[in-house]
Length: 159
Image (tube, rainbow, N blue to C red; front, side, top):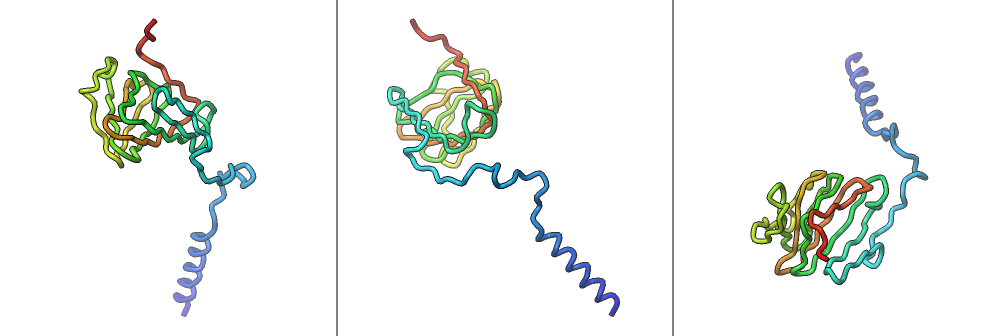
């Protein structure tokens, strides 16, 4: 009888602890941003001359903290060799996105790019040189990182 009593007490204590919300270190509800669905018309930065539409999904890449952006590359749209001063985590959402990474990506050579199909993941480490593009079809990528982030082009603008 005594063993059963201790077992039941132990089980009850475990269940209480396991189902009690952990609030240590969490921001109060008032300090958290409100939940807001993303509408395509919200937070768009369009660069139609370059065929790129960048939508801020969460946060702000120009301010401290986490951000999420979605980039839509029209077919044939490419970036030139560049790097960012913060890590960036990229997931291909739609289409095939082509990337060049590492020391060989200082010089633009689209024939050397690697095809990344929808569902692929690419890590751009801080200061890691790269460039990217959509070739024959639209490509959509989601980029997650910590702001503020800067983009530094490796090529000098032509005069």
